[in-house]
Length: 68
Image (tube, rainbow, N blue to C red; front, side, top):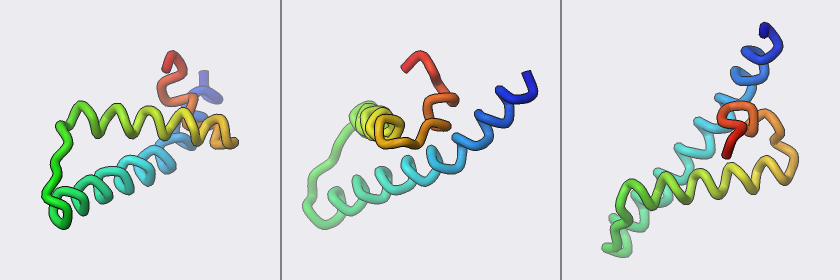
């Protein structure tokens, strides 16, 4: 059980970084291109990018929500 908590904590930092980057990018598109995406779309983009990161080797991201 202790190892599971450590793995989840290791996945939090990259997830925060990924979410912050995607939210910032969506904000820039909204401000500079006058296009808005609904929050549900932004969450879907973050989830898809997280899956890509896991495939690229960021295995601890998969420990946060392993079912997805």
